[in-house]
Amino acid sequence: MKYLISYIFLLLTPILVVAEENRNFIMLGKARSDGEIVKAKGLFKSLMIGHQQAISHNREESFISHITAKIKNKIILDVSTSPSLGSNPKIKYKFKDIGHPKSIEYIITDNKSNTKELSFDIKRKCSIKSKKEKVEYLNNYQSVNFRKTNPKAWKARTYKEAVNELYGLIESPIKNKINIESPDSIVCPDFYVSISSNEDLESIAIFVLELSHPTIAVFSIPPNSIIDYQIKTQVKYPKYSYIVIGKGRNGKFYKTMKTGKVERFSDACL
Image (cartoon, rainbow, N blue to C red; front, side, top):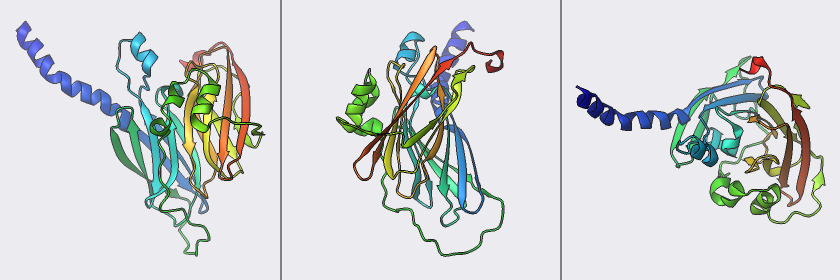
């Protein structure tokens, strides 16, 4: 009987492994439009296990590495991610309600290049009125996976090294044209950081100086996008320092920094 149970377990092991891996593709998505702007958010279920955590817990690396969202085959969100976002990362974003699409299609990629496509409907407060749109999203805008195009940026041990791998040497970036909103002090390790800007940026990179690998996310920004993102991040240090670097379509660079401190974790976090 003992050997039979062991044999059955061995047969089921591949199924269990696949089920564990597929957890990366489970997500919850919501989107609501007021007729002009769509506010969307996604909760991506993943343990987000990076290299160091995999070694210390004798686990396999497993994390979401890239997320793309589309409407009518036009990209409206494109972000490369790292395990530093913490388990079950959340992203909030906005886009212009051009063409009044019915749904948002997501393409989720993990660190093993496995992909999954999911779709979520857009809820509307009122009926759609037909009108001529003055602005169009580009059909030919291509997704950029910075984990593939700039792999060393994610392995970099310092912020300066990571920035150099992404953008090269940056001299005299323009200050404070990108807004960072986060609590000055936090009592929970998981919290939202808001990134917004009125500049015409083609990408935004987000770093946390205290991390051993400071690059946590890089957004590739389609033209005519609303640059207003919120990402759920995780900090387990007495203080945190966010630096955001933006690259404009005019070739100029922008930089903003925000610091905060972590108080004793509240029981409400448990």
